[in-house]
Length: 110
Length: 118
Figure 1 (tube, one colour):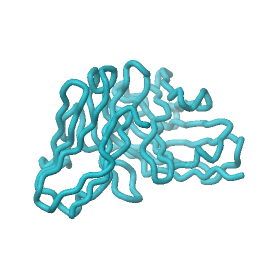
Figure 2 (cartoon, rainbow over the protein chains, first blue to last red):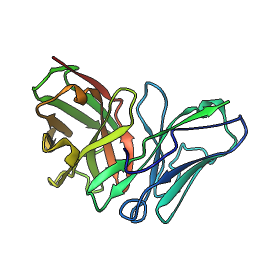
Figure 3 (spheres, rainbow over the protein chains, first blue to last red):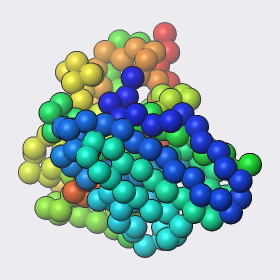
């Protein structure tokens, strides 16, 4: 059972928009910045977004993030088949004194 | 551009100690901006944070590993290491070394697969 809760899977058609939620608590998302990671099968995770919504160089602007209260979300617009991957949210939990991840969401582009 | 590379044995016997090293290139391990971490991923499962270290020695550990893990840094070689004692089959996973900048794990190694066997 992960401290951060994500839907196990989401799907949408190419060109559409999808949103992946990440729900936590006051000691993690409610207190610290959320980051997002993309992982393709057989590869290491790749940093996608930091500080709730900041894109590093290389992350397309089709990817955006948000956070409010104890929840956050990753939005992907203009879906492409190449976006099919697992997506993880993560942050520091000040109460537990640990880094916590969501359980991961598998994105399928139909 | 920073790169991280894990190394260590791919096979460890039950009850023994797992030892891994992460070599850092393109960045100094003594930069005050970064912490250095280990994260693992069991087969078909999600990500689990193991530990962090700052080059000055400040460490944080995941209590779920019940004191079995030790993270250390060797500044002269620009690398950091992980030891995990008394391993069981549940420790079979891909182990990633990661650079931590503020609230972001911004650089990941390619990962090394460790299998615990009896």
